[in-house]
Image (cartoon, rainbow, N blue to C red; front, side, top):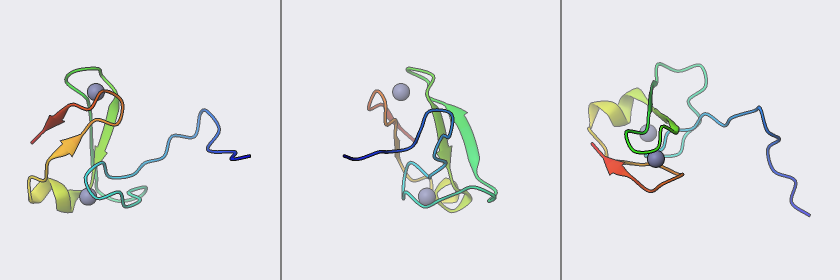
Length: 61
Ligand SMILES: [Zn+2]
Ligand SMILES: [Zn+2]
């Protein structure tokens, strides 16, 4: 009985730390492997935190 987010309302959270980045100066880019849209907040970007694609598991700097 878990009704999660409906389609069409993508959650914009940092893939590295998981914070909600809506309305922040976050970077977004497609996964180089599968093209999935990835968001990363400015703080993680500055620290070059590794990200992991939630769809295919690709990790990158
Ligand atoms: Zn982050
Ligand atoms: Zn991917």
